[in-house]
Length: 83
Image (tube, rainbow, N blue to C red):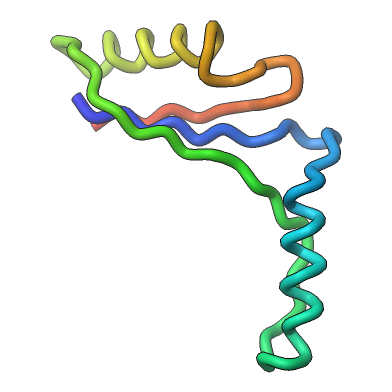
């Protein structure tokens, strides 16, 4: 089964990369004619195959992987998709 994990910093945790991207986009907005942007968050997406017989089993395995390795649950949150 295909699994997709989205990992982002939790609300309230300073996202330095997000602020840098936001500043760059707003700096270019006057040149490019784009609307200004705000609240930019940078995260990561992991996609992989999981050997499981049901979607629920796959989702449980992936959540366990996130809790133990893929996400720092102190400062990051994640969502799991299984197809």
